Amino acid sequence: MQVSTFLWFDGQAEAAATHYTALFPDSKILDTQHDADGHVITVVFALAGQRYVAYNGAQPYPLTGAISMYAECESQQEVDTLWTGLTDGGKEGPGGSLVDRFGVTWQVIPTTLQHLLKGAEPETAGRILAAVHAMTKIDIQGLVDARDQ
Image (cartoon, rainbow, N blue to C red):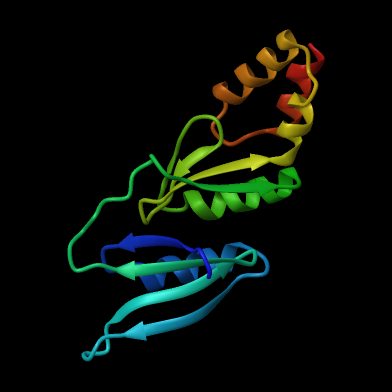
């Protein structure tokens, strides 16, 4: 048995899969299925080793922020690169969230955030979280500065 995230697109499954696989290391398109007229129906792809299915549905089902993709980044450079690629044609949101040009909501979060919060005193954690919520793209140095205040 295999579990995969299934993303419903309105005719943009192939474009989305191509865009995402260009942004993440260890990513590739695994399979593309077409209908009798040659139109792309599904694209199976992997992002950083995780399997996804992009589907071009006949009826549009809008993607919402109720479910989002969560990308943990090891460095500010990774955050910056991924943020730039995902916000291209999309919209920035608060606290490391964004909606890309395909309507998919993403959380782009540095692993440093978990390290700073782990074992932090409540007041320190409050300062760190307040800093996160005041940001759009997460700035790691800003988080460290909030901890050290």
